[in-house]
Image 1 (cartoon, rainbow, N blue to C red):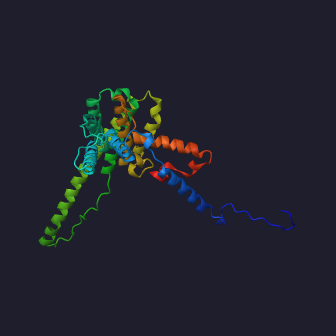
Image 2: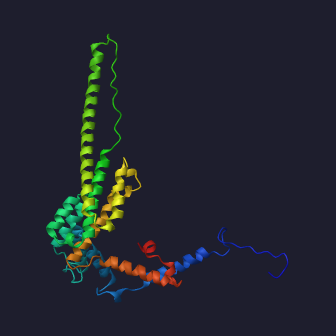
Image 3: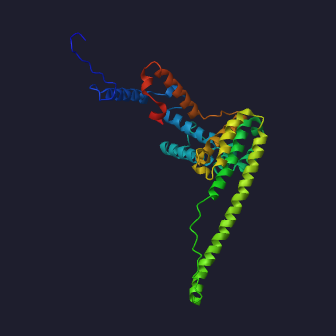
Length: 314
């Protein structure tokens, strides 16, 4: 400042800026996005056009993850579309085929069992179709065993429900009560007895399942006691036993059905590796490579700094 009593005002973002920097950034991002959309990828694949390449990515993803029926329906739709465009001719060689994939069917059954919470069925079918997989991938086997323990906890939690209000069992204590009044109480007493029986059955089932869960947990802990890498997982899953209703505990996310998916995908990847195939789909690899590349470009403050692959394109 060159003059006495001169003042300077600084704005660190607590007030709107005079210059609309947000609008400038939006316009710059729109320009970069338009450039990305206009970029041809025909030189990056062997398919005749971009549309065929994208269809191949989707078809490969469906077959890779064992969605057999969906893959068949998708391939049939592509064939129908191709015949219509070619005036009734057969599908061009570039279209995905509709071959029966027994391996994909087996993997689909295993995946479905895990997603249904039936880990025993998944283990049985894995050992039947791919006997070496669980032996060669012990971390996957461990996660499956832990998932079964979590499913047992979830089943016990579902039995712990708030009991409905019990019907009032009181009878009029006066001896002069009429026979009609006593008869009117009989349906109420029958409801009471039925509810008591049902609650007793539920309590017995709960106790039996809880005991089975505790025994399974002890066997599981003993089986992997020599592996120090399992300690954190055991601490997490065994903490569910500390709560009367684990669905309201800090570890409630473990009981969520969505938490089955990572286990199913990990086992599916292990099976594919055992078959000499890639553990990841082509579209997953494409996404991962793109994200790394964009992050690298953004480190220098260039166009990559304006793009977030996950937020902008997924």
